[in-house]
Length: 113
Image (cartoon, rainbow, N blue to C red):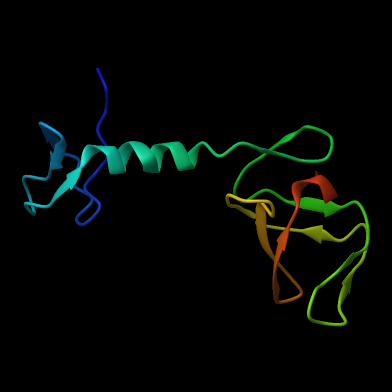
């Protein structure tokens, strides 16, 4: 038995499928079933660090080399620990904050802490 996602508007768990749409009986919200499948696919984003360890949202990582920040004179030093990372698609797969500055990092320059 497959489980359907909760309603994106009211978070009701009583969602049912009607043809190609998912329907919430509590708030009458309808959305395409393909959108729910695409959201599940994004959640399974596979990113690995420089040593091949899988990374997940909320992990902490350590930088393996000094990184210059484009557009500023800031240099993030090797060994800096970055907490609470977020994974995203693209070349720079890690979104984080270092000393209050929002950065996007490549996974090849970090290792899991």
